[in-house]
Length: 534
Image 1 (cartoon, rainbow, N blue to C red):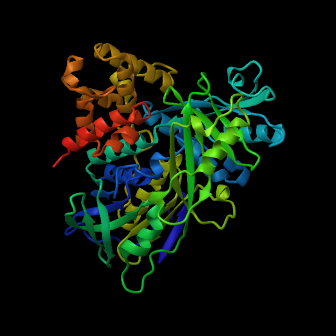
Image 2: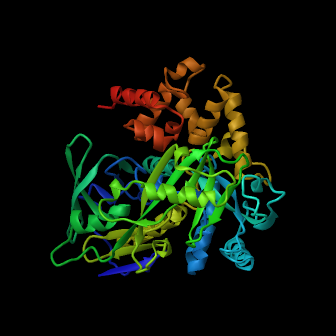
Image 3: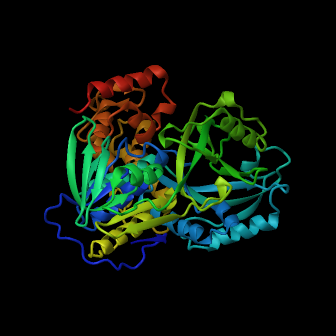
């Protein structure tokens, strides 16, 4: 039998699972994106023996290719996805408090275009957005006169009226790494560059064969398996996972929808983001990014074939430039683009004709005829913690040992800034706490250049102390391999954060690749190769 539940685990009817004796782990998690790492963290925190296997680097696909937002999804209200929006809105502040060094509040400006949606409809949508979930940190929405508000200056003169509302930003790839770090520190084993070659299901458990980065094979016996392979979730069930006789493991289908983004030099100086309505009824965002840039996205293009080969195409670049240029006084052109990225969102096929209308909610499917199998279908980065909690509940029920959830209110790795700076003050926001933390880092290590101190504090939070270690002067950080990147940080990333290649460092653990030229990126690549762990 199999049962599926959207966004929550159904009551278990399964009997107690086999004894743990004779199994290497309780749960094998396949996939090192945000859902896989979040699930591994939650399970490990409940005392389960967990092994996570990721065929590439952590967050190397969809989870590092988001729009970098923690948001409820304002536009999903038009598709009557009230449950999804409410769930995401509830999660925003939970996440913002858990890791204020890698995420924070962000105000969004929506210029009103009467040709798109009438003002009453926008106001009604924002009223719902403000009240579908409790807010403690994020302010509510309001109307603004763009002729007087700083956000109106970069826009064409015809946009005189707008609306401002709250959501949040996140460093998506680091969010994945922080979950993996927490999972490991709670006892999970996290293997990157490790492919699950086969997984045979029996009545008692799973027998999996893993191929490591060195080509060596490892056999693993697990009591349960979690399929969190993202865009590969369906193909994993159809090709890698081997059912017992007469079983069919793949009962759902995914729609793979490519979302592409462009990054251009900074278009505006203020700290708000924009949400623009397009004639095709879609929206795009223009977001302050990495101090000196503006991030513009996203597209929705259905793709076929291997998800790992998806790339932005010229028509998507032209589309994003054209839509942004409808609003900005100075046109955005393809020649300005300094970086692009694309990710494939694994959306559960709900027969919607328009890829933009396909639900972003998640569904957890349980197979209980034989060894427990849980497959994760769909999802969005904002709801990863709740998805992981529901998944861990379901796994515990299938193993006959339900254990209490714990992640709501828990900090992610490096996120307990208040403890490091002597406690939070009354009414202090996560953003204000972060500012105090950055200042404390600069006081503790006054020899760090200001820009470097700020970057390290925001990337690593309280883990910055472990990175800097006993260093007492800049020279103690080792050679500067590229501007602002020292050997000590590279060693830390290799030994603590699973970084093995230059791209892991430059585009996922950080975004330093944006600021380095080809020769500097090559220098990082050469260092990583020369210091590769045996």
